[in-house]
Length: 260
Length: 355
Image (cartoon, rainbow over the protein chains, first blue to last red):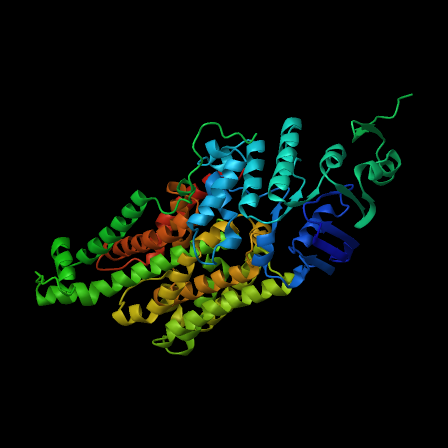
């Protein structure tokens, strides 16, 4: 598999605080990489740097080209970002919102072509949003809204999908559905997925590879069965957990210390 | 969850962004035409709107219509009233479209060019011209224009100096700071030349008294270019409504886009202000009325602001020159008198939307 995205000694500082310090990794086409780690570990900042949305030190290469010197439009044609808290203007319809995803393909002052409408229609179909296409975003439930945001990213027709906590606002069933959906999109369209995730069990089940960050550094990397151990999670999350290996999956259960 | 069933696939043609709803577009144009015609007809000499319309058509080539107006009436309509009406329409359209663009670029419902230093800068420029150049004369519009542009430029520079990449909040604070400073200078100059108080004051309140075709020609290029640039950015303004970060991830160079829109809106507003004085509230109430009645999408708000703003200021000017005829009310008084209560309603409503 070929490399699509790589970071060498990626460093991001806000003022004096180094939020990401010397992160290096290589992401291959079609891979799903999950960034895990406690709050403040630098997951979101890493995603934003990979997409070239913030200034950083070190090098990020997108298909071999430095992100820092690639135009915003060119990056947007290859990387779609689903933020944790997307702005969803309540009066915009789903169709209008998904169409905005075509922005990197539309001339700066031009308007959408038929091809853009077709791509948006495909994305809406793909996420089963057809009954909602004329509905304003403000009238959607959390799960429907999440699908609309993913549809917008899909309409962008980028090969790389960066997801920041894609399931944090969803209930248990919707979480699974959303991740299954991302996985099927990844397989069908050969997308590469990089996601920041809180839920370690879900991260372990869906991602090919986990990157455990702590204080802006990669402290563990590999398959779920290697990274998710009771000792590691205890050390970096300060959490008391049981890790269960079952059906080829790894499940992390929080455990309350026995009361005396 | 990806089930298609028996339904036909979603047709691409049905996936579209709403622009200006046709009915609203027609209403807005009729509103403007009615305002223009009514404004030409109203005045000390009664001339019917019908004959004026005929006289206007007579000016078009190839139609072979004879104007029913006498030569004196022709002169009253086309040399006295028309430049004033056209100027009011251009200024109103410009203030409203610039306000709508500023609100989009700063994602702030209260933003308009006045807030970022246009008003204070133009006021300072005009006051200096009136005080030091014997009443201003020819120099006044130029000084007001220069002051307005300098005000926004200073605010932008200050915003950049603070944060490197000025966020929307920083820029507005910088604008308020610059405006306070320029207002202090303006007040000082005014105090030092108290004999000019009357003319400075009446300029600040704005008006179209004594407008000529040369005023129209003077600002037409600025207003034309500026309004065209803003109209072309209506889709981009919708992208910006997703926030700087998401707009950037969709491929926009947010800083450059913001600067371009601010420059265009500022230049047009500065030109408008230079011939009309400071007419408040148009840039706020017109775009917000459209948001409340029609749509919040900039594809509707931007073009409708231009048309409705033009009509609104033409009507305000009719009120200003007829209510106390032969005396004139400053048009700023008229727009604020209607604008302030309306603005209160908008504020109430925007609080219920955001909370």
